Image (cartoon, rainbow over all chains, first blue to last red; front, side, top):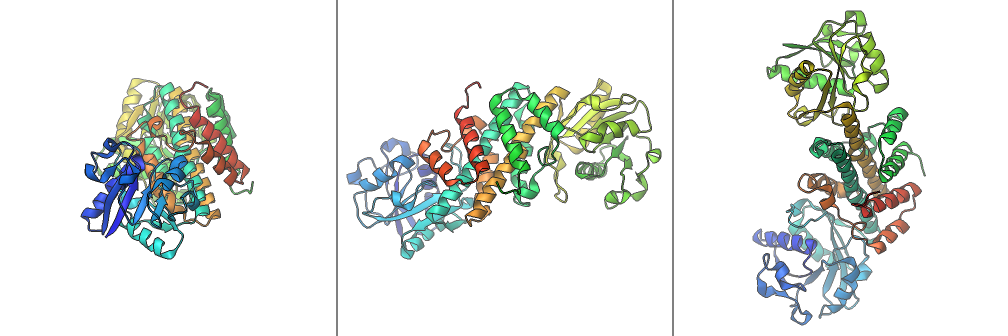
Length: 257
Length: 257
């Protein structure tokens, strides 16, 4: 039985807790034995109240501590764990292994997904990027990751930064394009639902074609007439600039920049 | 029985032919009676060879002619149809009703989707934007559209331009962000499949949350440390510029620009 301690009570912590609890019922050999949350009530609907502590002295022993807090407090939190030579991992895409305090063995357990409060998610499909200082710890991390996900990768800190940057493009920036699409629809009294099937197909298409082969539209066709008509239609400077730079990006596709 | 003529043999024409043929078997009261294709062989695997013509004089009578050709030849093609006072519609998101030659009754039948060769698609979920000069023609267009889609909208030319611009943002530009994500993965020896669940969830999330509420990531958190670390990581000027402008766009969200 692998004893897990969870530090944090935000979106990622909550989704991890739900996923590990599900794995416990599936007999994965995992147990959440201790949880640190500044506000104990934040997790009281998910966990037995007795295993939650808000005082570092009450944190119990575990084989692995998973730190699921904001990037800027990971170092501080990892220092506060009142044990030595335990495996302590963070769940951040942006930070290297070295963010963890040296008194414990360092690792990373980064679930690559966008988590929102109150939206349930199937953890089995979420890729988990693992990193550790030694192979015994990697083995332990794999056991824990496999308990909740079917998609586990060993990714070093430099590669994880690349994954995180790629994720910002395909998730955060894409969502901003959805937001712009939504704004254009609202302004022109068109229901946003009209573009939802297109959004869905755009995302599905690249499971069957490469993004290069999947590219359609006026930019890749060099259809200057449509491009100019769209630019004349847009009155918002932000939208206009994004239209220009992404049209250029599509047209430069394949060229080294 | 509504008799349909199809002009064109590209992606949109082919997907429409397949969808109408399916509707025929479903008893929708539609019949494809005549098809114009410059190269008859382009459609010979989809249709009875006898109803395809490559000479305008051989085009047969129909109640509606659907023009599914490139935007820049719609006007020319609509002029060549050897009939008068028929309902002639184009399938373009970018052009107004007025692109159709005045000798016939004008209309628009714009399926809002990204069509790729050899990728089958369920037409039932594709929104079709209709426009016509009078209500009788609109009624006829609705019958034809409802035969192949469950999602039919009446959208005027100005609104359709807005829909088309919104579609460029959520489809063409989003696909370019996928391409950049793919390029970053390749450069760092990471399998692109690692970000596919994130792409899928990003697209699904906005069916349950508004794009504004769905926004996550370093930009919306004003996490300058991560943003600067990502900008330092990116060496490609195009990627760097897109990163900056979309980060700014997320951070300006809600502000009037």
